[in-house]
Length: 221
Image (cartoon, rainbow, N blue to C red; front, side, top):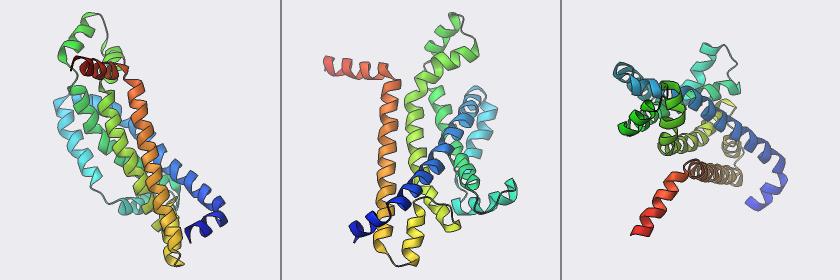
């Protein structure tokens, strides 16, 4: 049954897949851009951390569907505008990453920070050249969680008409086409696995010293 439905709807599947990718990944990029300076601030200032970390945790508790419905009134957009989903998922991404980034930066050895300062690195250069690269493994772990969560949450938007592959759920349910629902579920799971694997590979490429450390540990074992 699935194999009969797929060939007849390749165009629809491709369109919804592209929409799902856009709605999932654009918020991740926006979330990183916003969360990195907020995480840095939370790490630098105990007062800022006391506000930002609990606030980000509170934001993540807001139900996604409620946020999709409330945002049009705040942003002045149409209810079915993709902007609502993008902004909502960007908020969730920031909420996930602020604490992660703050903790990752706090875990950077003080001796490394002191050495960079002694070499004349100003705070901004030290952050970009030393602290942030050392925090990449933890940051990538947070990105993997945020990306997979976004890929899942996008499908909720189908309830208001903008859910990418989630549209296969609602349409399949309304028209009683189980194969359409199964196809949507399978593609979302596959998309999440692919994105997670790509981020894992990117993290390994961005941290060659981690790989060298693991190899040295295996050699000495």
